[in-house]
Image 1 (cartoon, one colour):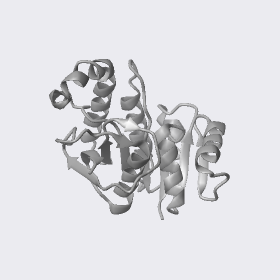
Image 2 (cartoon, one colour):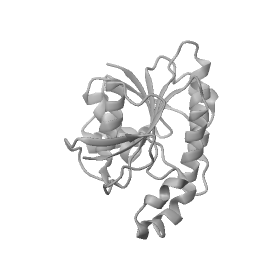
Image 3 (cartoon, helix red, strand yellow):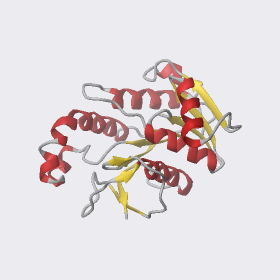
Amino acid sequence: MKTLAIFGATGQTGLHLVAQALFKGHNVKAIVRNEAKLKESLEKDHDIKDHENLNIIKVDDMFDEKQLEEPLKDVDVCLSTLGFGRGSTGYVDVTKAMSKALLTNENGCRRCIFMHSWYSEPTARVNCPFFLRWTLLLFIGPILDNMRKAEEFLQGQEDIDYSVVLPAGLVNGKATDCEFLSTEDSWFVPGVSGRIQRADVARYMLKVVEEDLHHKKIVAISPK
């Protein structure tokens, strides 16, 4: 059993991550801006209400490392499924804030697991199918660029033990029992479409925690 700090807990992938972590017996600190939304969603979608291992912590500004210092004390791993839109620098900002907050806690947690996306590295985008390369990637390119800047920041941090998990197309549905393909130091998995259930991304992130995988690595994943 570990104590996990989860950012993005009210999002579609984050909800699965919280629910699965609780089901597997972990202690969860859900770092949120809207406590009521998380409680309502957990009860409605996962039949979880007032779980003894769940500690919901309200933070007004996820980009302020000072507000994160206390919530990130006494945790084993930090996980983030936060997502940001076009024009936002959110991936970089929250990564820096989380890292700085962790480093203020002497002898505290240094382990972080982030969810980004395939093709965050620009040179990998030539491997995207032609139609998507000239439609979807043109639209989400700035988001992917911001993810990559966050990854570059992590790669420059000697004291932060990161893993960045890259799924491709996210779809809704229940978790499956699929096996995973994973490629370290890569921004896509060759030869597959990459579409994956959000619940399975959450399952893989917990796998990284429990099996102690991908230290200081970027890893692209896909169902096998």
